[in-house]
Length: 277
Image 1 (cartoon, helix red, strand yellow):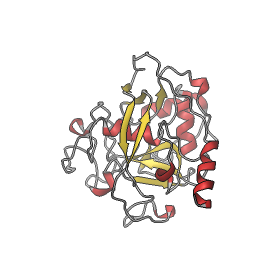
Image 2 (cartoon, one colour):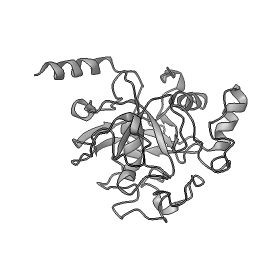
Image 3 (cartoon, rainbow, N blue to C red):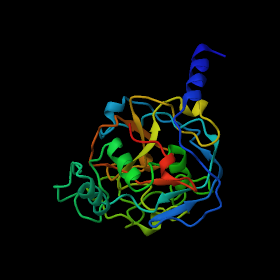
Image 4 (cartoon, rainbow, N blue to C red):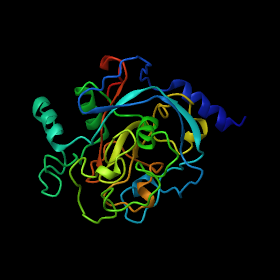
């Protein structure tokens, strides 16, 4: 075992804590859907070129962080938002807690109440989810909600992306309302996991994480400089809206292509969830 391998494995002994459960409760909270637990193949056998995280929103960037190797992951059952968090929902949080507005809330291209909220940092996204009695989904949970039980490239299957399934490739040049693409939803009925906006997830980013990832309920490394984001957005091409596509950026960034949705551990009280830091 190399020194690098030893250090990496040691780091994962210090992983942050989210409590998971196999509780029999299966009634989904309002606006959420139950994702069945179980084993699935996460990642891809084909990896894309890695670029600097600072190039995340460059039009000529291709990928950050390898999607390989494909590996078995087991996740416990959980709930996830059926739709991306909307401006309407987020503004209730702003008004109740007297926190700052989303960065693009005054922009008419992005401020319709039915559009997904954008211009939100990772901490703001996690704080919203905490306020709702939830948390950001882990990267493994997000991909499970997108993949379902099949070995597929996109949430709807292996058919190539088109304008009937998702908002991508700068065809519209702004976000669409949440849940607009009925034919683009996943097997679990989750909308907009490809296209529209990319989404913050819980994990810190480590390019080599898939080489050392725990097999059950992986959480990512305990610390880092960049947070993982998943799912393509309205600017991305067909390759970049594949469900295995991994990105990351600094957690303080607020961008017009980046939103989020929340998750809940099945049967676990919100007081056990990690707080934003």
